[in-house]
Image (cartoon, rainbow, N blue to C red; front, top):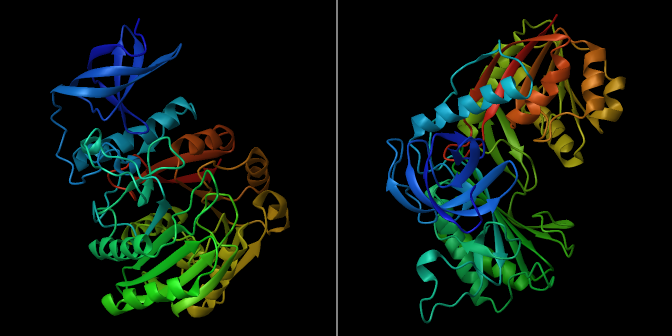
Amino acid sequence: MIKKGQDIHLEISDLAFGGRGLAKISGFAVFVDGAVEGDLVLARVTKNKKSFGEARVLEIITPSQFRVDPVCDYSGVCGGCSMQFINYERQLHYKTNHVREAIEHIALMDNVTVLPAVSSENNFAYRNKMEFTFSPDRWLMPGELGVEGVERGAGVGFHAPKSFQRVIDIKKCHLMPEQGNDILQEIRSHALESGLDAYNQRLHTGFWRFVTLRHSVYSDSWMVNLVTSSENDKTIFSLADKLTKKFDNITSIVNNITARKAGVAFGEYEKPVYGNNYIIERLGKFEFEISPNSFFQTNTRGAEKLYSIVTECAGLTGSEDVVDLYCGAGTIGIWLSQYARKVTGVEIVESAVIDARKNTERNGIENCSFHLGDVAHILSDVEKPDVMIVDPPRSGMSKEVVKQVIEMAPKRIVYVSCNPATMARDFLELKKFYKVNQIQPVDMFPNTYHIEAVARLDLL
């Protein structure tokens, strides 16, 4: 049996959910970071549990036919694009399999059609929102380790693996449009030269906390959201002046301020700095105001594909009442309003409901309403629909909500999932009352292991 710290040769036979290679030693599973089916690797065991082991690649002895050269300098260090070294067609294959395996092994259903994953229009530069963290203690890249004169210093980027304090100082992220990287570099330079410290998550000191960049595909405009621990108008407005002079398509700059210790990029309050406190995005014929803390699908073109599939699965004729659970800013409900008699959305986040109501007004929609509250607590007050849209968080639906959905007995449910495992868990109960007709995976996040899926369920 393997031991922690042991170096072993492994032949990778599959890719597990989460983007790690899978090898078997006499039936014992070993998950290997940075490996793909077909690789022969020398790996070092990092964890040895009763039922599985974990390892990291030391050397690729024979590369898989599915390997490609990553375009990103941080590939293998930053966990954001864990599948970037796998060719895109094979990524889609694995993602389809992961949905199918979740349905078979968790939902215990082997007769459900899982269609091949729908590809993304772009493999890179597809994200319309990127969040970066400031840290006084940047993570050293492998090529910097042990090099004399290399300073750790402050940085802004993504959290290093298994570290809440250090960040990988990102000079270029390929997931967002190129101009976003130029904007980030200007912010980094200003912050490092400002004389104000990056926020220390351990000591809870420092000024610069986060920067979130949002991009509108429709108008090719940008929003910059600077999250700081306190107010400093001189520094913030000086930065805004630099940014707007250099980038004429920045149409919104806001400053979110929070002294809370929680490491989340939300302010206790918000100050407008430049332009509007929102940007405009378009999905199909509908326009949406997106405020700094709004939820909006991060792959705009992918969202249009996703919502078209939701529409097809819903099978609306114009006479149906639709209930949209976990509706967020109402994008699905607004999209479906053109095909339904009435749409009712339910959402627990107040700012999302405010955005949803604003966007119905902006688009002149009169058959949508949105209710604020916990789905589990207020679903019983909602009229029984003909069709129900369920788009839960990664944790899926609670048992209480599943029970209420079954009691309401809509004729059709369209389940939109960002986590195949929790979708399959929910199907364990729903399958007693509904037939799962088909599942369509949709790749909204190329080069990562994440996959969306749309399932159509019809009442038995």
